Length: 272
Image (cartoon, rainbow, N blue to C red; front, side, top):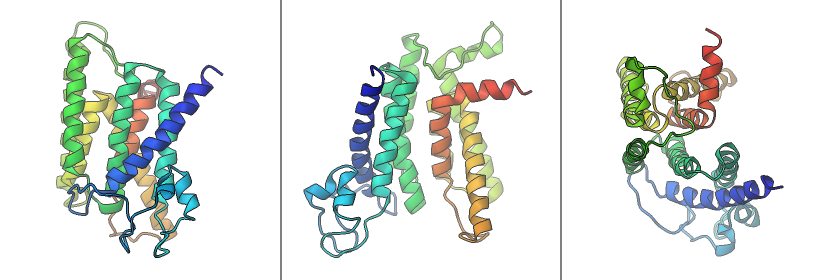
């Protein structure tokens, strides 16, 4: 009971926070600009009623449609709210009431917004990515100055060259640079298969997870993207030359690395 009750509290807080993330992500236009405005129907412009804005419940009260013009409301609304709640509860169960939890709630919020904007508009807006990079770099620097060890970070024993990554700021910087360079090479080789937004997102993930966990994030993202792309091609829902946003899969990879990256890396290293 001592664990279940606060987990339920974080679930509910996450659902409410997910409604705000939905609103924020919906305020990003197709050019990547940010225009904060009251939630409204994209077809007729009618503002949503108060009861229809209730997290999770509002969608079902409105029966998934605009009260004015009967236009269907995107299923993204309840899905994001529920996923945010589940993720908040999972992060609490994984890290408890710690500084890591506070940091990861912010990181998860950034990745959820980037997931939505790339999925819907093929855009990873700088208005989210750049502040996220600055925040992750500041966290890494503060952690280093305070000699605090983040629960998801990996430290190298010994005094050889690899021990330099026991400085978490250097570890985060190395992760960000390595991931960004790797994705930049993919952009060059693919000739448009990916964009610079993916490069910046990879750099953000590197700053969040550090070296070498960022490679877990990238691997999970690439694996998930490949599986989904193959399934869409086989089912006929996507054609060979149709674009598929890669950002959402990178976001998933980043969240998996922050939750279970150390265990995944340990499992992999145990196989070789």
